[in-house]
Image (tube, rainbow, N blue to C red):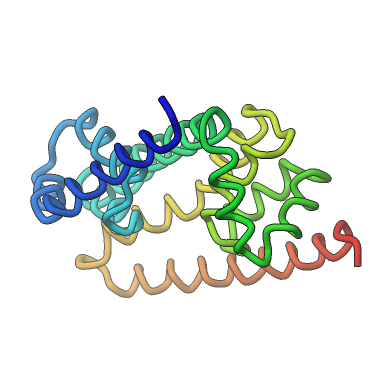
Amino acid sequence: MKGWAIVLVYAAAIAVCLFYRTELSDWMRQSPSIVVSFAIALALLLFPVLPFKIVIGTLGYMYGPLLGAFISWTAASVASVIVFVVVRATLRERAAAYLSKFGQAERLRVLMERRPFATILAARLVPVFPQTLVNIYPAFLSIRLSTYAVASSLGKIPAMLVFAYLGDRLFADLRSAIAVLAVYGAFLAATYVGYRLWARRHTPE
């Protein structure tokens, strides 16, 4: 399929999901089967008409924090691989032109080529770079799919656990939810400082 055709299909799917976003959200709250929930989460990742943190929280509310986080993490991991493969196979030139608009793209390229696993992992743990860059930029570089998939998946775990727990506990135990957010915020701050120190050592002046 040509690049423009993929773009049209993607746009049409987003339009449909946007039109039925309320119905999709209500349906997820009715506790469908795990397979159906996974499929919906995957679709909402590939066609992002709702913030995925809301989806994670909803799954945490429906299935509990651990299972909700696992469903979210699995869907996110599969979606990232699909995006990687599609971009590498069909959209390299178009996406490269789009990414050139980001001022951080060159720095990310240098870091990814030197330390691909660590850079992708850090970018997932902390939103250092726009996630659009992290989703598709590795597909343009000589980074193996396995390296990208493992690093990206591992980096998603903390956020999945936190937001699934919040979805499960937000209305039942607000104090615990606030405490978890505080701990997660401290984790993000520490990880960000560590990343900045590490990146300074591996990025040329």
